[in-house]
Length: 397
Image 1 (cartoon, one colour):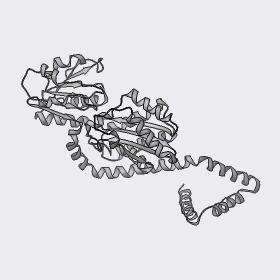
Image 2 (cartoon, rainbow, N blue to C red):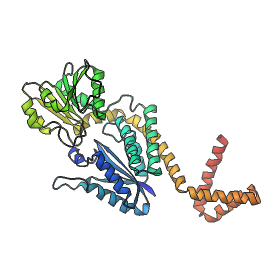
Image 3 (cartoon, one colour):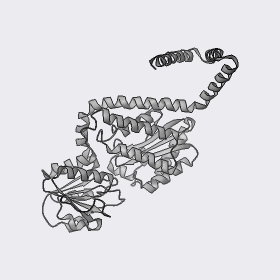
Image 4 (tube, helix red, strand yellow):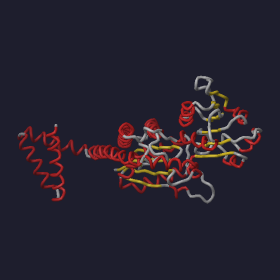
């Protein structure tokens, strides 16, 4: 029995391909339930972000081929790809320790486009919670996720990986500033401010205090207007567009929030503008970049800034890997012991029964005799080495 993983991420697929792998929450839950009802897969968790779709699975090793095949085909049946594109080419498969280690790296932000970014930890916890609600997570994946989250929290407190936070949100604001030269006094239209990424962008903009923010909302969720921001109905976004210098969209909408033709009709003033699209699938029609004096950025355009950030954090990342590996090993020990729990209980009961009948000394002696007779020499040697470590542990305590 082991953990398996199917992954599509920014490392293996560009934005256009990743957009094809985007699933609504309803589709995610449908997929999870389909997987555990098939027979081979005992547990399933789905992690979906703007930069990755990952499916964590647990089942018998002898069924690994069926597990991978069933999970992959079940996913691909729910997706649509442009003609000539084979979605299966972008899937990556991991099992055992590689799958475990990958989850720990992801939770700590070490596998993110922006190394050390904070949002991924919350997304990992949300994936775990969603699987619990769907009834598709059991003791093994639940415990693995718990250890991964705990390890990630320790990385954040004991390394400087997140002390100079660089996230997708901060990079988006930086990209807008670089294009316009300065954001002081600029008008920013933020579409999707109530979402996780949108809320993070809002906080970044508010902390800098340089801009006047106009937020589209489907319902008032930030307490009304202030001197720094104004809430406007989502349906009126084009009416405000001409006034804007920066347009940022970060929704979970399955369709465009900003289209080229409507932008053309809305704009009358000649000035520099920049559109920043942080959604997967995309929110903004990328053809807006064809307009005069107009910038356009999406998730994949932030790779350069992310690479600079990642190079600066390489030393901290090495320390983080050591911390995570300690937690992964703890999980592995738990997993091995959990799988053998019934055997341990059985041997324990036999020792106790013999101790009651013949005394503890004879019961323990019989245990070691049975051990010697049942193990191969190399197995016995490893056990005795482990026994020394147990003895040292007793002395310390």
